[in-house]
Length: 229
Image 1 (cartoon, rainbow, N blue to C red):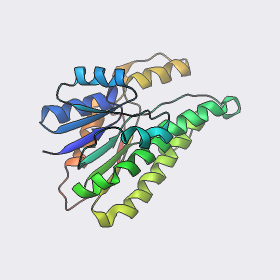
Image 2: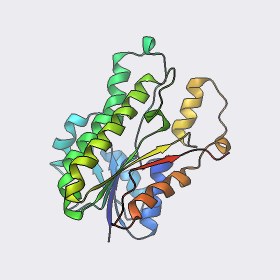
Image 3: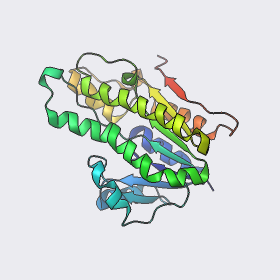
Image 4: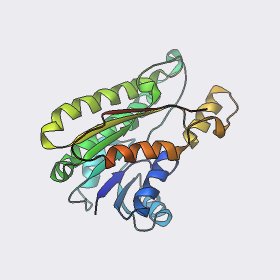
């Protein structure tokens, strides 16, 4: 039975991906920021297991994992969680930079480091859900785009380093997707939000699982998913 660990299962792309993996009978572990959230996730996704660790404080992930049971092997580690705060660079305080980089870049790097032994054991797969902002940075997207450009570099370096260990690495670059984060972005932009204009989370989940399910003779390194409307 394949074993997967996901971040961001509380909503949007992560929730859809978790549900699909559970429905097909895979073993699913979900990262929760605290014990209360872990209980909520287990109730929402019966059969899933949880780990507690706060992505906003990546320096404490190692300590947190040292007090919990971890999976022995991991067929995939799916980095789906993220955060965004828009604003001009001239108005963006250091706290926003620190929080954005912690959640979107440093935590995925640390989580991957801590779970590499399990990934190597299974010749597993690391998927980073990036963003169109990982390719192009626009006005008022500075901190978010910087974190996603960094995430692209993290994925590319990891791919080169772990290829000999049989670990595959994929970056997924969705365009605007109909998620609670997108609704927040529209609010920050002062725009009306119409979910029907954007990519369905189910479509991005399909892209993620396509990469994960690819036979071992090949590796999808990058997937760009754009709105079709």
